[in-house]
Structures are given as C-alpha cells and as structure tokens.
Length: 211
Image 1 (cartoon, rainbow, N blue to C red):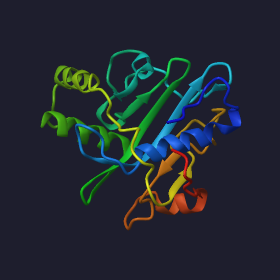
Image 2: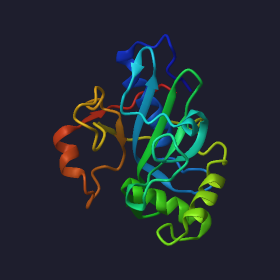
Image 3: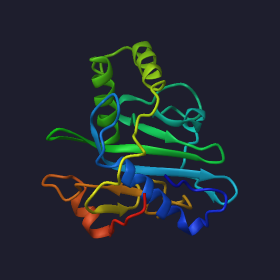
C-alpha cells in the first residue's frame, strides 16, 4: 500500500487518499463485520498540507485504530447527536483520520456520523449509546480504541465506481473546505439522503489497477 510522504506534491494528496479509500470502502471492518460505504478523509501535514479542518487529536496519531471524536484535544466525548467514529491511519510525519459517515450491515444502511458511532458502540458492547452512562461510554470506547488493525489494507481495492465530493458541514472560511476528500460507494442506492446533492456536486473516479 502506498501512503503520502513528504515528497508527495500537495496537488496529488487527493489521489493518494482515493487509493486508500478504495482499500477501506466495501470491505468489512475487523471485529464488527460492517461495510464502510461513505467516508471523509482529514489529512494534516504541517509544512505542505496544513488542512485546517483536521482535528488532530493525539489519539488520531496512531495507525489502524478506531477513534471516537472528542471535544477539542480533551478526553471528553462529544454529545450524543454530535458523536462520530473513525479510523486513524497516521504514519508519524502526518495525521490521517478517516471519518465513517455511512456503513452497511447486511441489507441495512446506517447513515450519519452519530448513528454510525452509536451502531459500532452497540455492536461491541450490546449497550445503547444514548442511555449508557458517561463513564460507561468512555470505558467501552477506550476498549474499542485499543483494537488493532481495524481495516485490512492488504485487501484488493473495491470494485465498481467510487464517488468523490466535498466533505460535509465545514466552515466556509476553512482553506480546505472545497477539497474532494469524501469518498462513497453504493451512493446511488434508493433512499440515500444525500443522493441529490451528490449527483449535483460530485465527480466519479474510474478505478485503476494500483494496489
């Protein structure tokens, strides 16, 4: 698997993130057996890709571990409706966090960052995130964040089209808000809430043979 490096031209970051996305989308997450179908990438490198939309929490500096979003740089979990879960794929010289916006479990789709986080929490603990106590949430999430190798990056890239578009809800003043760092598969399914906006604003990338 190829990862961005300090030699990577800034203009090629989107292509690298696309290759990484193809390794994640359409493949089951270890420990959970759910399929990511909608992700956003937040890539930060201080000297040549200082994406000011990236949170850069210390827990995101790890590689191939889950991360549940916190309030700023603290260890306080976000409120229920603003919770999110992702995968840290950082390599030391940069921070790469992959936010899970949508997953599929069999024929069931779970769309929305808070719903995805709550679903993973329930799959792991059998507890309802909204009714679990604050201490229960943090204890269980810390256990989940210790799980290693959440994604199989050695898998063959997903087949079929991968859709790309801008990330959701970013501040209009952010320098990197218009980057097409959101990647989706199965995006044209019936009932997908973001379908209209995606079709109006997205581009579809053709798969290639790079591994």
